[in-house]
Length: 234
Image (cartoon, rainbow, N blue to C red):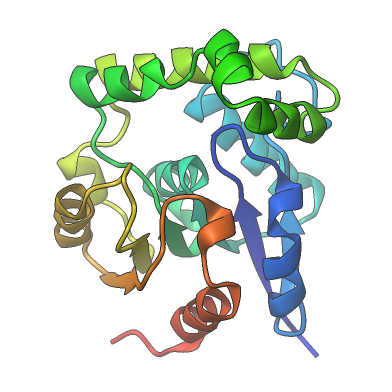
């Protein structure tokens, strides 16, 4: 039986291993693919840099290696931004795009707020449990370097956002933007603005859901992914 390819893209400081439960729920219905962006999980840092464009190029390379002419994408947080960047610039490769907890509104103020949270020494001191998790997650890299490079990536986005309103207006892929009603990182306002800019879009609010992927109701998330990828778009 043919199953549509579905690629799951992790967020900043994340790794493909975070999708295991979701992938298990979706595997009966899709040809599931996951990758680690360079510098994450067991993948070393790329000599090409540590940014959205590099991560997008790695997705395209993965598609070529696996002979995938097109793929649906579910992107969590930063993974959703990468997915939208791909849909904007490589529409022939991208089917439907679903994002969860993706921050779209990047400027110096919003980036500065996030960068303050990305001090590896403070993380080690104030939240040692999270530091240990990052160390276990990024086994091939120094987790502190991952945090430092992520802070630089976000700072760069604050100075030069890669996706603006006119970019979203050019996205041909049907998109579903999902966010949790308790997300303290992503605002309703920015999500609604992007939703209204996209030519073909839906928006879904997940109840009692904070920003971390681990806080999402996995069966509910799987339901919305299945519903969106199979429904007829007029």
